[in-house]
Image (cartoon, rainbow, N blue to C red; front, top):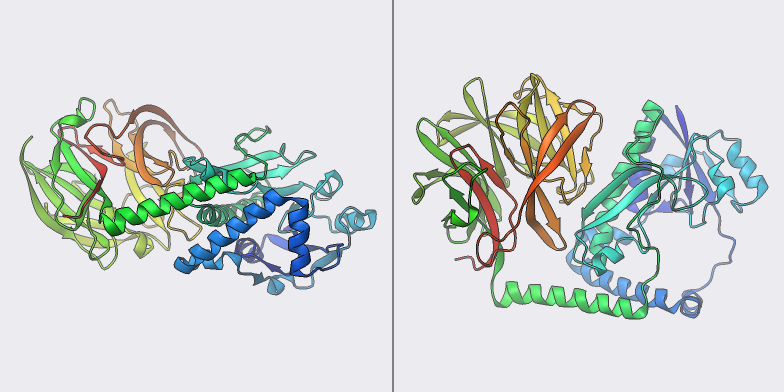
Length: 537
């Protein structure tokens, strides 16, 4: 059992640290000790705090005021934002294993910590800066997040496509720790929302890494011991804060104009071309017209019994959910919408198809059902029957399944943080049969933690027995499904995954499109989608 120390400022903490502690406390491999760092300053009233802050750092005070106003406004519309400032008691987890520290730099306190024989210390919510003698108090050092400063702000301010975080083992220099995990999430449209997503996304991975360390007695070796790049460590000036406020306010204002006055939405559509993907000229594709108040997306195509059928997501704006619809591709100019083939009470999309023992199966995205559901085609092309859940109690998007070396591989985008974001992490599982329901997780999960390349956008098969090409969505600032990259999978096993980018698809093949996030081909036809600002007619 590993002895894990946690620096805390009090027995109350935010929901993110609370969730880490809760998960660690459930493990039989971890014993927790709480290092309570008591402040040395006397409490002051709110007026004194504000006056002191303005006098000491006016730029920081101005930034905090803007952030607070933004939080108050957004909390009116979002329950998740409102809960950001909530505190949770960890008294139930302490169980008398608490060590009070008057000053974490005193020799007496150092001796207290060393006497516990801790294996690792988590830098919880204690405000003190940790120095070398504290870091050396545990056998394997201090584990900590690195978000940059202010966390989640500069990426929004500069409208970066992704916001990063690192989990590191600290050494003498706070920004030269041993990096053991790096993640990149899609940057949200405001500082408050980005901070919420960053904290909620990263916290479960801290718990996961510590628990794996407690069981396996080692940390992942994903990054070299090098300086982190890309993190900005400075307070925005008053001018920068004002510019951020103006830019974000303009973004929300234009969105309101677009939705409320112009009544236009970001609307996906599907097109096809009679060609293999290698030679497909996407500009010459046939556009499948969206039904009124619907959009089509996520197309997959198959030819069976001399009929070519494109299965796709059919989203209804009125019902606010999607089903799976079939479209027959007759030739290069003609198609026929056959209508819905699978409808459930919950949203469905990404109807991935595979064949096994001469039978046709589908694993559509069913996030709202918290499972990966398997359907079988019992009468091609319209009649499908639900078979079972091949994975349950999971929040998974965009599953693809293929065979390699007599094993079936499952790649999916999983979220373990309870958020709607499924664009950041790629997970892999394997089994002897695609119909099994006891899929085994790969040792290196998540394979990828980067919103620029993690999310599946289809799959393309290649000749010569090679592994398939994974189509990868690229997200951008305030833009889901901005473009695509194609990556040849070169290695996939229980303990490794490698892929090499071989191409890109930009949203420039039709006029006035602003995104594309899916492509698939069966060798004879290639189907793909694209995004426009459009009315719902």
